[in-house]
Image (cartoon, rainbow, N blue to C red; front, side, top):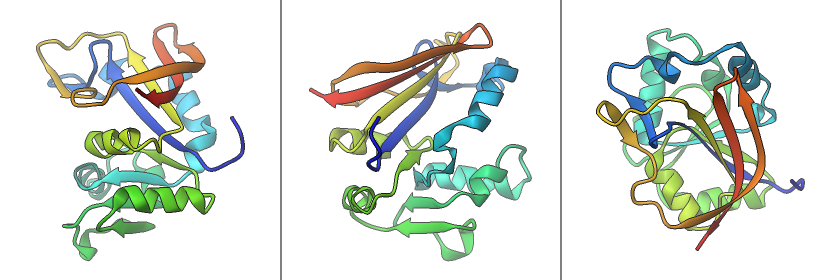
Length: 184
């Protein structure tokens, strides 16, 4: 990948395309030492996070309750797209984008700032549709959550051709697939 600013959309998903499952633990209980090590070593970890208001409120709630693993989100620069976030609810290092999220992300990239997403299915769908996503990463966990699945990731997305850039298997079971997306 070249050195220009990039936008990475990064999802974890069950094999059947859900982001979570009712009654299942985080990562469906399948995260192992290789996966956790890979998460902590990602080059993109230092990139600012772009997220929508729903995801932001969820993360702020985790942070307020002392949920483990949220420290990195607290300290990272964040851009939250929302017209209804109260200033008193802001986590440190947060910039609020109240309108024209597409234009704001485009300007950040033009200014040389690489970005990554966290959750935010609707926002990611809009960024993808506008051609702003340079990399689309999916961590596929080996579960099917057909009955308990929550947060179907790809419903309502445009048709997208995905050209594989890189793939790996972690802990002998979790597939990490990096693609270059092209909306068709």
